[in-house]
Structure formats: structure tokens, C-alpha cells
Amino acid sequence: MTQNISIDHLLLSVPQIDDEHRVLISQANEYSAAVDAGASRAELELRMTQLIEAFQLHFESEEGLMRSSSFPGLTLHADQHRKLIAQMTGLRDGLGSGGVQLCNALMLFARLWTEQHITGPDTAFAKFLHGGKACCGSGLLSTGQ
Image 1 (cartoon, rainbow, N blue to C red):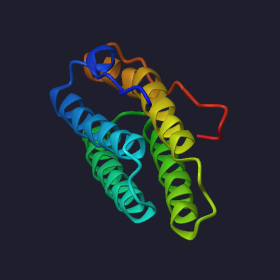
Image 2 (tube, rainbow, N blue to C red):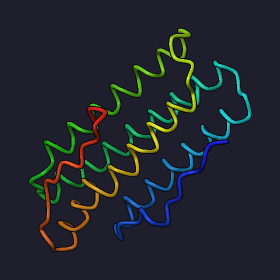
Image 3 (cartoon, rainbow, N blue to C red):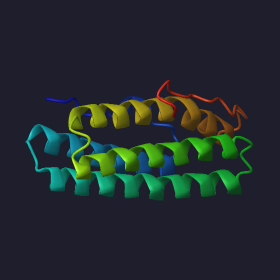
Image 4 (tube, rainbow, N blue to C red):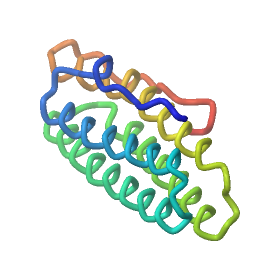
């Protein structure tokens, strides 16, 4: 049984972003529950597609907030977003074709990326918004985030 992601230690005190992160984490936890319940490959592929779409919507929203606040780390941050979407899409496609069978490993990847991205680059952006002007930390995972 996989462990759910908890939002408590990931709050940034930026209501828009915190709310969006709650939605993402909820969907990730639902995916994890479906894996644990032995859901069909088709259901897992659908849930992963929904998770990817949720990440895309959040990233668009977050990048819009970065643009409107003239965040100097936008380019690097957006590059990390694009890389995650490409990685998740590749894993989802592998799941659909039968090439990926380690659904728990896929969930672990999404969980680690989410937590490290929020505690790294997203925290730097939140500090920038709160007037600390901290920015641009890479927060990159060794997985090529």
C-alpha cells in the first residue's frame, strides 16, 4: 500500500497556489488508491491522463502568476514544468501500451517530484511573492526533472 501525499508541510501561504496544490495532491492520492485497489490498466491510464491535465492547468496558472509578478526564475521553472509533463506523458503512454507495469514506481516518481518541486522552486517563488526576492533555485531531482 502506497502512502498518501500530505499537503500540511507543503503550504506556501500563497492561497491560489496552495489551493491548486491541494487539488493535485488529491488527484495523486486518488491515483495511488486506484493502484492499491488493483484498478485496470485502462482506468490507471485514464487517471494518469487526468493527473497530467491537472498538472498542466496548475503550471499554466502558476506561470501566469510568475509572469504577472515579473519573477526572474520563470524560464527555469517553466522548463521544469515541461520536463515533468513530458516524463509523465511518456510513462502514461508506456502504461497504455503495456511497456510500463510498475504503477507504484510511477506514483512514487510523481510524489517525489511534487514534494521536491514544491519545497524547492515553488518555495523560492513564494518567498519572492512575499517580498523575500529569493528566486531561481533549481531544486532539480536526479531523475532529470
